[in-house]
Figure 1: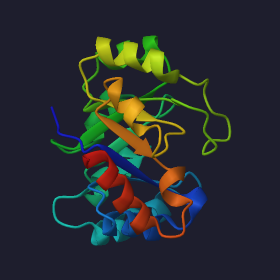
Figure 2: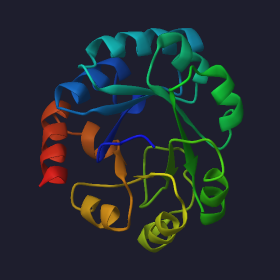
Figure 3: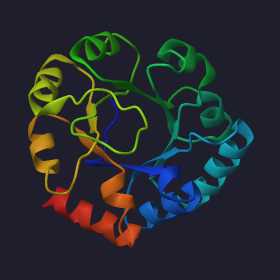
Figure 4: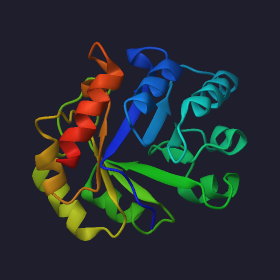
Length: 203
């Protein structure tokens, strides 16, 4: 089972250029960054991932959203899949041995099914209301997150509307990591906000 840092940072193109955002997140100390660009062609996403990898410090990992083929070709740490992407089984065929596969879930039943797959982590969300998706799934909430964490064996990455103020409550439910987008990227200095997050989570 892989070790995940408390902070799972997401460089989402809705907040700016994904490569620049990833570089700022790494500069701020993030050790695990997902690059998410829903607007990119495969060719452009590959170029973005390759550029973002150049900014990753030793030991840091970059995850590609949706595209296991891009993750394999670029040599990124792995892929994060949604409910409508390739199944984890098919993604594993694309990836090299040792590459990470994470999977989004939005309910107890989805999380329990995902726990049967060859996954490195299960993402659960949205925990709170979120503005980073055009058509978000229903809010999961802390009580259901706590129940999911108690019933699955894979590490849980909680995502969706999590702020610096609510992160402690989320982790107390049993989540291994918190995936953060808006509360990292909407501030003036992404690197400074990332350092603030890491200091808070480590205190």
